Length: 287
Image (cartoon, rainbow, N blue to C red; front, side, top):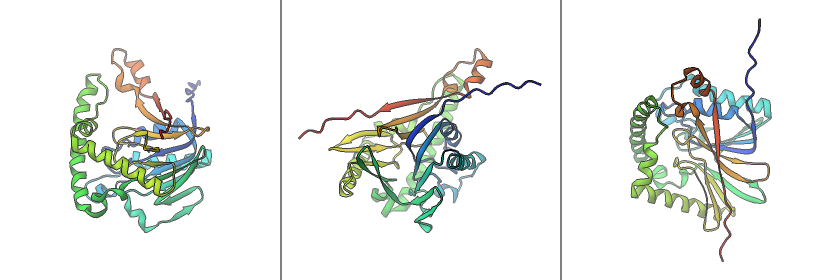
């Protein structure tokens, strides 16, 4: 009996990976894609920066699926195989973690925020919801907005189902809405500026956050602002290499971009994932 030799998967090693806003327990969560992504990576430190579990929706109409459990199994596998240090920071959707904070066992730590050092600089790491006055003071309004966002994601899934059948790539409706609606653009801009001010108060050189599902890596008034995006639509993470350089890393399943003329080849492509990097270009500070 002969066995087909499995294809070797190239493992990319990072010093640090930051992932946020996975929203496990919701239909929109790209848990399956995230597990594939993590199988291609190893890292010394993995920061789960809030909203990993969506307790808000689980309490109402969310469902916990096997693929959501596989995500945590993958995390445990990374701890076992690579001795990865895992730090889980609470967000607003997984605020139930407040009941156990602070918590540490082995290589797993659960906390509210964190300060890390990278290439001689200090970065304040926090989910970001604590600086959102709507989420902090008027939770019922925030949850109402969450319902609207969930509906938009449902419309988005139906639209992309049609696009996939036509061989077209994924298209994010909510990202377009965010970029076009003036109030949304203003909110994102205010959020970014507010968090960089917090980094200054913490005497840090930069801020690492999530929360608004808007991946970014830039400088604002001399402070480095980094947002890891989300695993509902963007499917992005922040990565630090061994030299302390940061980049945004995206997951893309190539099967969504293939035609169906050769079904055999297309099936093989479904097992392939590609990583795209958007490097941070350092800007000279102006006096």
